[in-house]
Length: 297
Image (cartoon, rainbow, N blue to C red; front, top):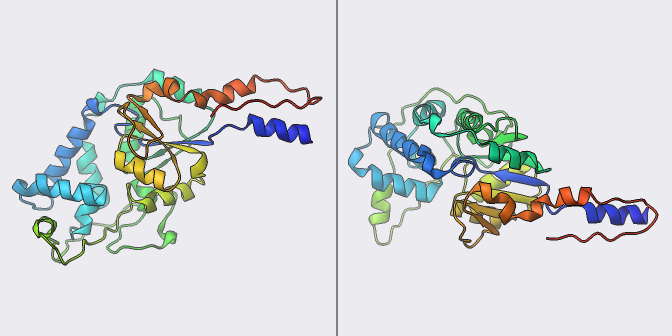
């Protein structure tokens, strides 16, 4: 039994799970999806919310910077809208044909003997379309998406974890808000603002709460998980909750990133330890003698 225990300990790999962002992580920014998405968001703000187009660049930047997504920021400052209709407008017109099948990435992922899960701020329809275009729709155990962390349309901030469900529900019909819109541009233009930024009812990266909830939902041990992201702030939030982190899109490591990849295709060269499990499985064991198998970490 002692020998068996030693063998199993030596055989155990460093990681149990690979947690992947989707957009600009599993396919490159050069696809144009992110740019098209930004344009669609700006059009939505003008056409559906009646926001003056002249202030949208500054407003959008402040919302994204302070709330993680423009959508979360819009809800925080007082705009109310149907979540499904928002996603349909913003993602429904994206040039998905720009996302090409990626057999190289498929082969890499299939050869990694770990749990593989998607964690995206996007909605489930977009995630399914993007993964299908990549040819990766059957690779992942599950998808943690907008609906996972925001299963109901909420008008108030809640810390009740009972609100979280595995299957997202359709949001309610759009409600025209009569409440005053918080002037976030004016807030930051004031040298010493006395008011506090309003909170958003939407749960999304890079909030540490969103990451912790995702880990709980998927039953993930952060200490034994690699988190792949193209966003530096999401990487840093992931690091703060205990994840091992991989910044995708640059070979330059930043604070909070344990690894950095120019492309997800560089996975094997940059993190060869992920293939330790394959090497260890080739080690024979007769059970007659104690063999200490070295573990490269």
